[in-house]
Amino acid sequence: MKIINIVGARPNFMKIAPLMRAYQAAPSIEPLLVHTGQHYDHKMSQLFFEELGIPRPDIDLEVGSGSHAVQTAEIMKRFEPVCLERKPDMVLVVGDVNSTIACALVAAKLGIKVAHVEAGLRSFDRAMPEEINRVLTDAISDLLFVSEPSGVTNLKAEGVPDEKVHLVGNVMIDTLLANLEKAKARNTTAALGLTPKAFALVTLHRPSNVDDPTTFKRIWSTIVRVAERTSVVFPVHPRTRARMETFGLLQSVASSGGAIRLLEPQGYLEFLGLMADASVVLTDSGGIQEETTILGTPCVTLRENTERPVTCEVGGNRLVGTDAEKIWAGFVESMRTQVAVARPPLWDGKTAERIVRVLAG
Ligand code: UD1
Image 1 (cartoon, protein in one colour):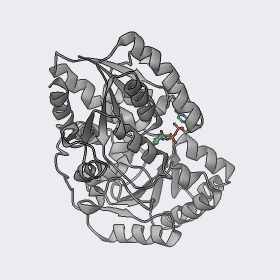
Image 2 (cartoon, protein in one colour; image 1 turned 90 degrees about the horizontal axis):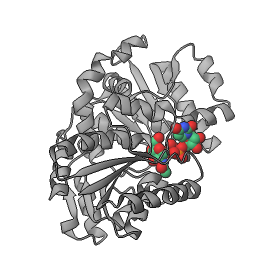
Image 3 (spheres, protein in one colour; image 1 turned 30 degrees about the horizontal axis):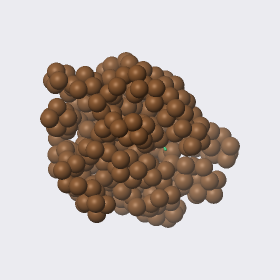
Image 4 (cartoon, helix red, strand yellow; image 1 turned 120 degrees about the vertical axis):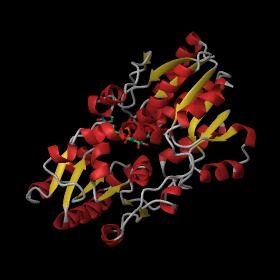
């Protein structure tokens, strides 16, 4: 059985790594890897292949950046001939990025089976491009691999037949557990001159948070306030870096006297080490909510909703939105309370093996 596996953007790489490894135990499967090129900077892409030992892609579509329509269409145009030439039995997509829906749609229209890893997650917020990608990808998938119980409930409510749905756990946590010791051995925290459990780690990249100057400036004023209480480390996504320049936010970094440290996008091992050592993480990412849950690091999520509710139910994730006072209150509360390491069901490092067993049938 020939399976084309798709990666495109940074959060895809840690999800595909354990699958590519698990295929080695399934001789009936011939895996191919296609990189759409949605993310292309060395630090957003190649670095993850190196650190996670992901095989070199068999095909690189090199689409690059563009508006949603342009990027999605370009991936589709370039992926269709690959399917026609390689004739896969299945296309496997992960996550919720534009590469996910684009390749799933091409495959479904060609009558090729689609498997979706991380199916069923719902924020119920259609203003999020990722929510559109999730809903549409699930609607045309034949096999839906789900990471947390809410996903099963959501798919049932949407009328997806039970036999298509497999609650298997979280592939991203496979990667985390396999790399945690290596990440700690990198000593990234010490290399940055920081003390473990004495800094806040920040990430922001969601268009709804960083593209609108009023919203971003409001969030930023709270980050500056956090930096008066503890050191702030902020690896900056390229989109966010561009907005900070445009909105004139870099001045406050200079005047923070070193309390705010802007970093380039970090590698997987470096960032994992920082997450494990941070006293709190402030983020608008999806995956980081899950990673901090397993690490027992409190997470303050600067969004109004989450498609990953298990992280709030069993972990130390707090949804605070983007109101300055609510972010601050979430930060203060997180610093005050202890968070235990939490393990949602099947987040045990063996999810990729379970998925490959189902695929191998
Ligand atoms: C994408 C995903 C988002 C995910 C995020 C992780 C979609 C709809 N969004 O958002 O779900 O959380 O990846 O990073 O697929 N850029 C570079 N270099 C790169 C990649 C991007 O400079 O290697 C810049 C470009 O200016 C680009 C912008 O970042 O226009 C946004 O990139 P894009 O892939 O469109 O979306 P992300 O915001 O990264």
